[in-house]
Image 1: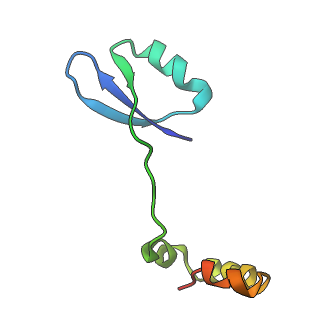
Image 2 (image 1 turned 60 degrees about the vertical axis):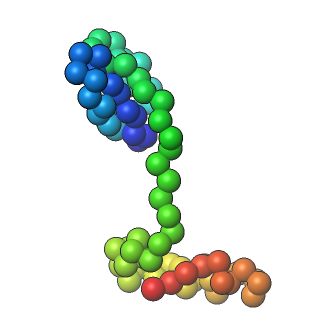
Length: 80
């Protein structure tokens, strides 16, 4: 589910909610004091901390993917 930013019209506070795309309009109707705020997308980086959290099962999956790639692309897959 995507994250959306909404602004409280009374306080000016920005809140972030996880709402299904199909339910977003209904959420705004149910909360008339909120308005949608357009913001920059949240982009995550491919840093090593994500690999550390993934566990050893993910390392095995990456190794299998890497073994099936042509040699010129094998450096694109980073393992722990």
